[in-house]
Length: 236
Image (cartoon, rainbow, N blue to C red; front, side, top):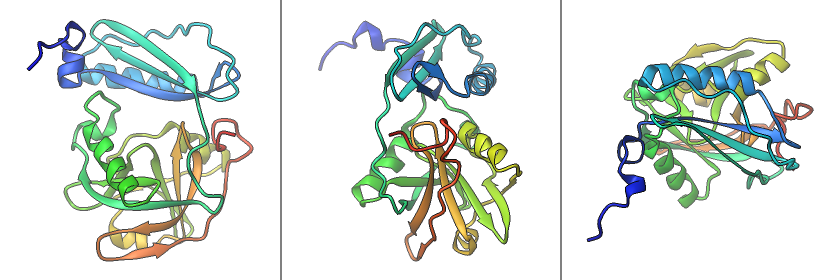
């Protein structure tokens, strides 16, 4: 047994008492920054943390980067690193509907209490899938481990009720000049969907071509959308 390092003896490290957001950068420009900071500030208010510092340092002019902004009781911190293309086939992504549940209150926020998302991603990767979907207590899909979910069902766009308000997904809907309705995304609804997309800062917008659950599976036709927008395309 070893003594706990001083750097881990904080509420942020011990209990996940922190808020964060991850946003894409392109040649040193932070994309969708105001939207990310607005969501981050709402989470800080929910967690009784100080508001995020809105002044960014000068960023390296990476071709594509991922900027993580983290707020703890000690202040606002950042990490900027190169963003590599995600391991997605040109045909689209395979997705696993996991049994991992989101927290009923924290699911709408990005916090340091991130274990369910790590577990869902591990389960998906171990099974050979790009993404794992988390569920609520009723078995409805709520979020991806690193992306937000968007469906088109009967010509209508639907987003999960209860998940993180995805900035990338909102930007896509704005690009498509349409709106989406929040609804419980049941397994039955997933099976009825004509199109499914994953939306995230690190991935851009990626179509789902195959979804696997415990007792059913479905193939989808891939439709690549939003690829002319720097915050929505897959990083190169």
